[in-house]
Each structure stands twice: as C-alpha cells, then as structure tokens.
Image 1 (cartoon, rainbow, N blue to C red):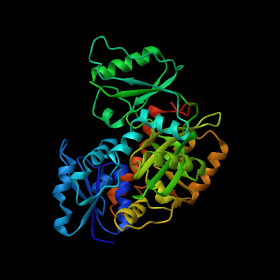
Image 2 (image 1 turned 135 degrees about the vertical axis):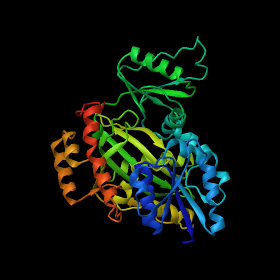
Image 3 (image 1 turned 60 degrees about the horizontal axis):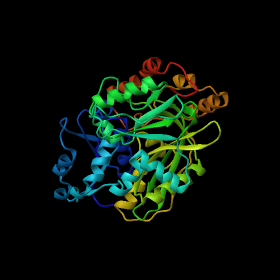
Image 4 (image 1 turned 45 degrees about the horizontal axis):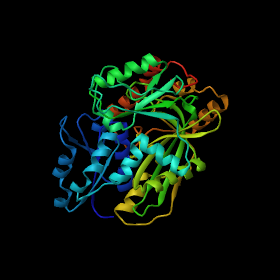
Length: 405
C-alpha cells in the first residue's frame, strides 16, 4: 500500500473509533483534526492531534497538512452531518486526498429525509407516514405551518441534519416527541425564532422500545458494488437531548432481508462510499426505514467487532484499486458503551437479557477500551465515562417505555 496520511475530522467517540480502525488497517499513526477532542483522543498513544480553532475551516487545515509534499496521499474520514456535507461539497479542493463520500447528487437523494422517502417508495421500501414543513419564508408574520393530520403523538425532526446543526436555541433536541398540537406549535415558534429556514418532518410514531431498532452499515465501492454490509440489533439508545437516537448498546447480527433493501436504496441513488441506516421493526412486523446517514455512523466499530474493519474495505477500493468480494459482519458480539448492569435494567424481554449476559461473559466490544493504549489516566477516564451513563440515564430515561420516549 502506498504511503498515506490518514486524518479524521472530529473529536468524539466516533472519531476515536475511526482513528482506531485506521490504525488497525494501516499500522501507523493517525491524525485527528478537531477543536476540542475528548481526552480519550488526546491521551492516545497512536493519535496526533492537530488543533482546529473554533470556526476555522477544516478544508483549509487539510490543505495545510499537504500530504503531497511528504510524498504521501491523504485519506480523510469524518462522521458528523456537517463535516460529511462539507467534504461532499468541497471534495474538488482536495486533489491529494481520498474522500470516501458520495457525489453531491447521491448525497442529496439520501440525506434530505423527504427525498429519501421518495427514493424508498421508488424501490418498494417502507418508511413512516410523514408531512414536510418548509420554513422558507417563515420570518414573514403571515407564515403558517401546514395542518398535521397524523394522529398524536408524533415525532418531529429536521429533514436535513446539517441545516439543523447550524442553528441554536434553548432546549434544542435532535429528535422531538410531540404529544399535542400545542407542543408542535411551540416547536414551530422555537424554530422560527432561531432563524431556521430549511425543512422539518413530522412523522408517525412507530411503537416499540429501543430493542425494536436495527442499524445497518454498508459500503458501496467505486464501481457501485456493495462490498461491505453488516447490521446490529439495538438494545439501548442515548436519551440526552442532543444525542437521542444514537445507539449505546447493540448485538451484531445479520439481518439479510434488511441488507437487501438497503442495497436497493443505495443502488437506486447511484451511491458510493459508507452509509448507515436506521430501521425499526413495527409491532405489526413492518420493517420501517427511518433514514440513511451519508457517513459511516458514530458506532462504526461494531462492524470491526463483527469481523470486518470498514477502513480496510475502503482502502482496498480507493487506494489499492482492488475489486474485492463482499465482506459481511456476521460474528455475534455485544457492542456496548455502557455498563452491562445498566443495560440490563432496560431490557424487558428475559430471553434477550439472558442472551446479553451470555455475550457479555464472552467479552464486550467498546472502541474506547483499546488494549494497545498504555495511559493509566486514559483508562481511568474511559471507565469513568462508562460509569457516568448511570447518571445520564437516571436523568433522561429512568426506565424503558413502550415508545422509547
């Protein structure tokens, strides 16, 4: 493999997971470019941190690293909506870099949740019933939101995550669970007050707790072939307002029927690169596709735990030019960022509880728990972070509910 300069933009658990997987694939140091990386990153033995001033341009910082002057080729990964959109829009500026993200056309087709629903309908994949609310012109005093004829309670969320990331207001949440029209009207006023001019979705609430969720992670190579696929049964999701919906515990297992549907969506979009799907199994058995993220996902390490390092698949395609056979994550393993004792509190199905106990006894996969890291301080911080989930869940989700809200 040619000499590479691997860089991850970000600074959270997901960024560390990407850096760890790049390190595993390349056996070399990895640079993390971020403004406030977590200590699990700054104390790492194999990560070099390049500080990015708040508000600074990450693309300019990448150019300044200038891999060509070192006789290297850059590889850049990121895992937030904002950074993914930036890399898609400005990839032409990064001539010396491998940028494993889709084209602008494919990105728009899957990342706008309204376009995603239309794409799913085209290929026969089920999505929630929804209504689109366009906030263009909402600064006009005469602006009114459309009537919502979906029965309450409903779920509301931004149609384009990157647009929502650009606004701020007190009490902001990633996803909104709305019980009444008055609550919905209040949300519309918050968005107008914050200057939101993009689109919001109101969706039917699909019943079921976190264990009804499924995660799918895929890679479409530069020839349009699905060369990596894997999935996991979600056990528990984060419930902090800005993190809600992010899985914190999963069992890696194959769901081949969902894989086939995901592949149809990606092929119809002409997609290339990594993609991560959120799916929920409704009480009536419907497999409901909520969204696809045009990035690998915060919990990408579950794929490595399941037997396939996504970075190796991507590097084989975009660096080595290899057309590899499809790799599937099939190793059953418990992936968890939270203590097992805490996780078990939220599992109401006894057979699932027993399964988790059995898998936990065999070993738990956590990207931050890296045996190659030598810092005692880092190890203590990682364990303290896991333990802190007791406090977080006591505050935001003290017990499991039938809707997961």
